[in-house]
Length: 289
Image (cartoon, rainbow, N blue to C red):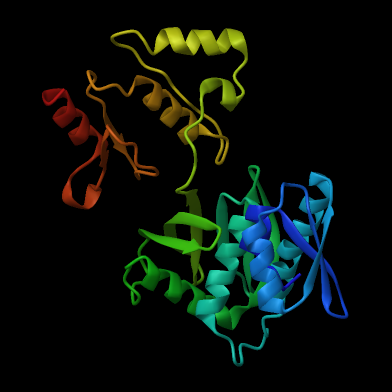
C-alpha cells in the first residue's frame, strides 16, 4: 500500500493490493486516471494490472491507511527518549483529521498524558503517552498558536493553521491550568474546505425547512441555533447566511471566533482584551447597518 500515497489513493480511489515479479496489481472503483497509472508504472518500473472493485472494497482498504497512522502514533517511545515532539503533535492532529474528529483533548494525569478525540459528539480515548511528553506537546502547541510559552497560571486561547496533501484545517486552541499542576489543551478542528450546504443537504425535513426559509425572510427577529459540540450549529448558521448573502443586502456578523470566511459577509471577531465584546460589536454594527 505504501507504493501509492494515502492522498493519491483517496483522491483517485486507487489501491495497490499485490506486487509480484515485475508487475503490480491495482484496484479502483472509478474510471482509471491514466496519467496516475502511467506515473506509478514509470516510478516503480512495473507492469500494471488494473482491477475493478466495489466502493465498499476501496473504502475498506483506505481505512487500512488510517489504522497504519494510528499504529505509528502508538509506536511512540513512552520513556521519552529520542522522541520528536513536533512529529508527535503533527501526527496526533493529522490522525484526528482523518478520523473526522471535531476536538482533541490533551489532558495531564498523575502518571500519563491522555489523548482523547471527539467524534460524532462523543469523546473516546485514543492513546496514553508518558507524562514527561505532556509539557513538550503543550509547548509545541503554544508556539504554533503564538501563545506565551512561559505562562502556566492563566488560561490562553489561540489559533493556527495546518495543511497536508489531503486536508487543510484551522485549529482553535484553548489551554487552561489545572488544580494540582499541569495544563489541559483542547484543540478544535475547523475544516477550511468545508462546503456550505443547503438546508435540504443538512437534513431538514420539508416542513421545518419551509419554516426556516420563511422566517429568515422577515425584516427583524431572532433564530436560536443550539446543540452540543460538533452537532452542526456553525454549519447551519453559515448555510442561512449564504442564503441571505446578496449584493443588495449588508450582512455583518460578530463571532468568537470566525470559523470560516464567507465572501460578501462582513465578519468580525470579538477581542475582550481590547474591550471589543459582543455588546460593543452589536452597538457598532447597529450604527453601520
